[in-house]
Length: 101
Image 1 (cartoon, rainbow, N blue to C red):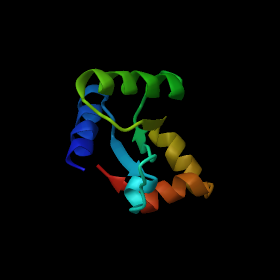
Image 2: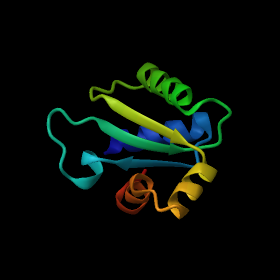
Image 3: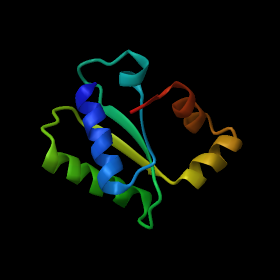
Image 4: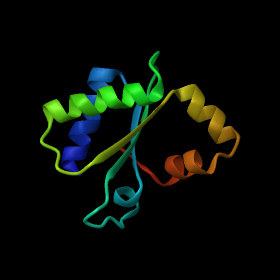
């Protein structure tokens, strides 16, 4: 968990992310040997979400010796707010059950 917190701090510092939230099996306490690390990064960006996630993934790979695969989802604060109000189950689940790093 300490390494994940360092990764989250790195994302916040270098990409000006407002929040980094761990979700999925690592947050919910049921990871197995094949589990990946799932992160929701909430930040303002002019890039398309998948491209911004790829840029973040590459920066993490260059700066950390991370052994597990990582799935990064990038969304803007406005997108998150709108989807939460619309009762988007996926977003609601992450915000309510995830662990903010």
